[in-house]
Image (cartoon, protein in one colour):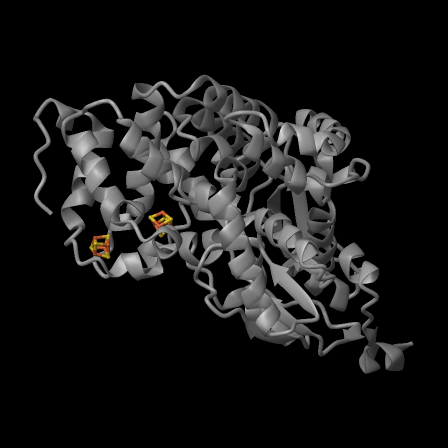
Length: 455
Ligand code: SF4
Ligand code: SF4
């Protein structure tokens, strides 16, 4: 694609990067076939190619974002399915990230939009604030029939309240900075990103990760000052805020790496993994942070990526339950991790099945299911219907956002199939307790014959 950036615009490194990306697009349109918003809406401007044209026009003229650009970029899920499909290697992720940041700098959103986005950005990345907000949401749920009619924000409030759990559990011991020594001689030392929303909504995921790694003789450190990876605000275009979150994490992990050493930084939410693996790009022009960020991105591993290169503990339970594996977009498109989680589940006995149309997003996408409830709701129904076609006993995935989104779709259809994180299943079958969702569904796995023999 030919570009017409002015020489002044190209003095900006972000513009240079986007211009380079734009030149790689050959307008072939292959990406439209796998874009969820194009599939649903059928509008070229809601396809990757259409958005690329809109972004090109905005950036090369360095003009403020128009309401049309904002509408179609806001509708993009950042699912990155288009990047998997594109034969020319167009880095749509970096382009749309730049567009979102340009929108936030040059466009004044409506009052309700600003307030709503401001609240999400001020609450979700902070576990304590999020916990309080969830308590408020549990009470506010009863007012949904009234709140849903509020002009401009009613649908978003309804979506937000419907996704909030009725109850939340207590704090996990893993919310504190600490070192969990390995069982037996130490084979590896890793940092665990405990995250922001995940430990509040489902502390069992990190707890299963620590138990499993511990049995594999891996020492785990949860460093002081580690926090939200910045993905939530990054996808809202809040560049300075996301960089500030990232810097805190980089400093915490580099300090550990240069101290006792780190073999990996383990991430259990694939949405966070995609962002942390991109820290090297975010700070590429920052002389103080570039090298440290590149090291962190290199050390960052999804938990399944790490487990795939290490020996799992022996199974203590026998299972052949049918598991539908839902690959989160940030896992399959963002990080190109496809087979590892399924191979791990199969290796401990599960009968793993792919979900039809598995490349299409479930509509979760960070805060998308709150900000774009109508499209997100349609994608959720489509995903749940596809999962139900294979009649699974369990659904597994590697991203809490998808668990919440699909969980809501299941409950809407009175489907009680449990949805769990891949690592919870691996922990269960190799000696951990039964995951809460599995217990609630009444599913059991017998003690493995080798374990009985040892007893
Ligand atoms: S598939 Fe790639 S090259 Fe083709 S239009 Fe889409 S982004 Fe451009
Ligand atoms: S990121 Fe997803 S929603 Fe956005 S243009 Fe690409 S395929 Fe479409």
